[in-house]
Length: 285
Image (cartoon, rainbow, N blue to C red; front, top):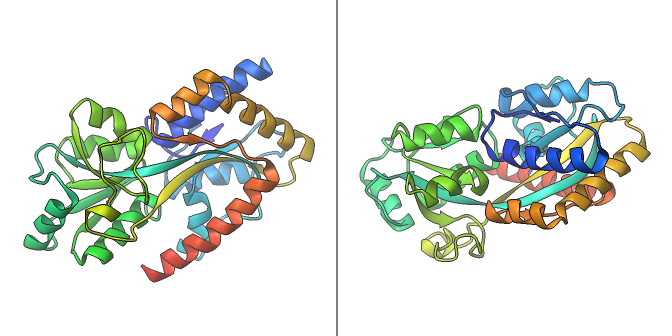
């Protein structure tokens, strides 16, 4: 499994959980290799150019289908050079700030930003990721001037947020929820239209002053194009079976994620829909 982000982020956490389940069900070790950089494209390129034999597989976030709208030139085609295998999970994003930030609600944070235009910063795991676009959407909807600070993954971004080097981040729940529960970060809102069972007392950003705000991220698995269909189907079925195991259900749920386990055909159709949806968001922002 090639994970195109550093260890500790949500893609890495979910990828390792699935790798462990596959190792047990296939009786063959599945190794996770972290290849961060270039908004996930360094690791994705490695998989796109790998031998299509089922032994090199990409685990990535929704940015995989967003990048084609962001970059005019890439070394591979995210839609044509891969075989969609399965969607692992769908995850709400959460708006988090460091404990030193003088804001305890979305309204407080917006007021703080309006009082100091251009002074507040928002981190993201990379340029163009759903977390970045969520920050841009909030910026536009709230009419505030905040500065984007991109990182090479959620892990280092979260470290700097805890350290007070950046003001806020709209992050995927798997990489931030443990820091919220330990008291290192404050959660101000959930990005989806409905509250999440993982944080039932946390209001949505939409109900906190930005009606219509609704963004989630998701994670999936891709094989290189021309990987035999029987291999793609086998890996997809084994991952789906693993996601239904009691211990595997608990892992995503504990991180605020909802396991999916779609078929290759279902995931291919979903990727196409998401590609078109995010292309519009990128253009508008």
